[in-house]
Image (cartoon, rainbow, N blue to C red; front, side):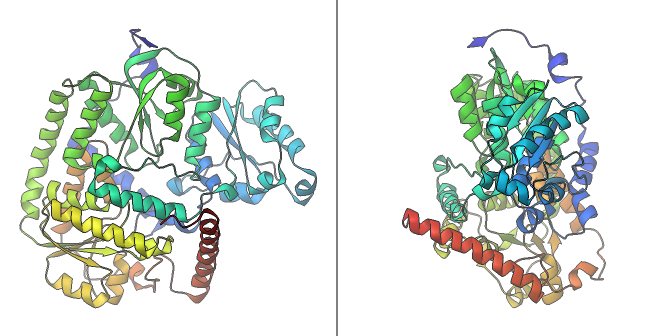
Length: 541
């Protein structure tokens, strides 16, 4: 039900922060963006690499999501090794999760069960930390043993909320699900109205969100023009400044932000159903359940909401969902025109040179390249697309073929006019580099080319995250950063990191027989799992 009850903004949102001016916002954003690289020393966006090669269990995603909730303690029901390794999460390697209690299951518990240990540990955790919420996270071991985790939670009486999250790693999605998802995405590049209503379970974050809806949220009177925003967390690049820009634009539209999920307090989560609209940035399963349970509508932030026109469309679609058609026009247009004015000087600088862009085919590649060409006005002569990563993720040759075909059709429809080169060799990249003034790399591996082909690349793999913000300032900040890098004097010395021998497919893994044997074994096991499941379900190609 809707109500015209007024919201006490100070009580609900806290004291408002002043929106950062462009000249100060960029510095803070870029400092945040480069923090991972400074700490880890990996010549690429580190979140993806850590998640891909080291910390990739569903439990990891659940631990991280729970750690975002103010006043919550994640309790791991499993062996101590699980708790030890999950203290580090890919999104904040520089900030370990210190408060991560564990039931410390051993061989005896595998035989006799660990329910009593869980019961005692819940009491212990409450008396030690006095949290507002204890989130119980079972592991593969406790899941296979069959402990009645939900039954224990029901029995235990402590003066705080207890949440059960299905975080057992063995229930992770199979590898062929990504192949099907990529194929659906490739089809939607041609027709965005066919965007896949996918549900990639197994990331851990999704399981936490669904559990919050089912077990913690409470019935509320819906407040008009109030929205919830799903976030990747406060450790996401530029989270605070992006949120302030969203609030600033929403304010001009007459829209208010209720909370960011799961980056909020336990009490705020309980009041989440007061929002009229949920803005979904990951999977829609939790939002569908909220709509079913409490009547809240939702809007999925799709890939076509990137870029100046895409961001403008996003805010217009939010307004439409809230019945504010026309009321967002002036506020959104003002912010867009201001950003375009700030970006114009950098566009003029870029127009003097020719560019080649090296990228990897993935979810947003066509729309990302469109931003380079249309928003930043980069005169691109060659687009080099590497599909080796996709093969490493068990994406079939047929799906890769469809992706490349649809990608090229999209570029043709947009009249971008550059040459697309698939999986270029070092010699081919060297020839391309001779024909342009700058080679940008937004995903692929500059050290490989610097060492093997003497090709100087400008790495934008980390700063490209600025282009995925739900606002206009990120594009301006990216342009400002790129201009500063392009036209400053660069050292001729090779960085130490470019002197290692990396594997050409699985960067940043070293081309070491032992490392690659381990990787090969892991890949083979995943492939066998996929083949077995495909045989059971029949060929769905």
